[in-house]
Image (tube, rainbow, N blue to C red):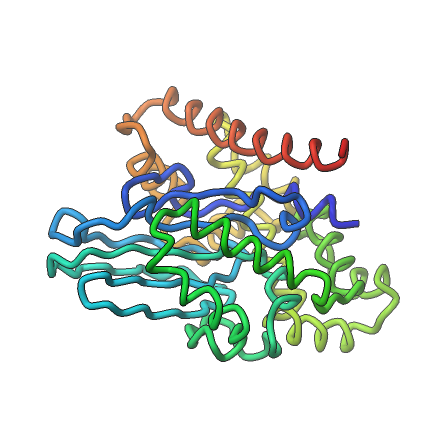
Length: 315
């Protein structure tokens, strides 16, 4: 049942961004890949200077995050929980204080955080809260290890062990899981009434469960998943044509597609693609070759993920 969820390839606004402040690691144990998209943060502590200051576009990626900011100079750790975002925003990191800092975060699929939480996801849409409000059990153990374990790999391993131990007691709901699976299979184009029917519940009950387990309505998640599939195709297909995507993803017409994309991304398709290219690991150019390179590298990343899944099935 969970197989479809693990193959869902959500993307950020700059999916190939890798630097001293931001790297990603997939879960090593396949039991977690239906819940955790990846662990991310700084590979090692870095000195915060004007060169490290930046701003990042954060788009609706159908994920939620637990994020720790570790300041070794000030000997402080702050931990926050970011609920699901249905609108883009700019994240500004303009600190220039010479402190030795690092970041560690767990990025859950939107439907993957609740099983490990101690409270509902209701009211978490576009909200940044103290991590202890919903993950106090995790924070009490993990926070104490973040100064000792300084690399992203060490911290990811520690968090993964805690989540795996908790998994046997995780709260599950088959209706929410099945609904999320159907939304992905339909690429976000399925209507809520039909979705509720396939899950054998009323539309009202499905909406109540989504607020509890994810923090948004089924209709909103459908819209965000459709946007993510569209964004995948824009980056991975160098011959992308909006008119073809209109039919494929159930938009009324090309204008509707353009409006919906810009509403989620804050910029049009050409600008969004260029932003992604400019923040890739390699220097960006303005030709189709670089778009093809982005496509290949995204596909390579997905291939790594799929090989992990296949290994888990073989075992």
